[in-house]
Length: 97
Image 1 (cartoon, rainbow, N blue to C red):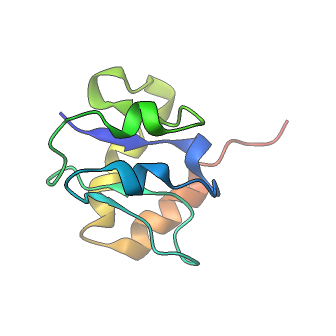
Image 2 (cartoon, one colour; image 1 turned 30 degrees about the vertical axis):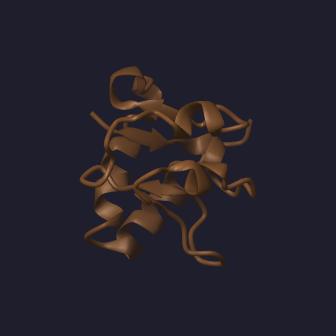
């Protein structure tokens, strides 16, 4: 099991999840990435990031809402094809009403 940041994290300035991760598996390239990405291969499932997130944008794999399932694809993709993952983040933005 791993954890994923979701749409609420997009363009969020608070990066507490990066600082709190004991194995440094949360990544964000300042000025390029719009969301923090969690490396599913590096995540040790400790859950430290979830309560540290002030906007409740992080979910465990088991608790990821179906409406946010795309993030389970975006995160692993980031670690093999960053540009493709970044493009998918833009597509995952909610449509304004």
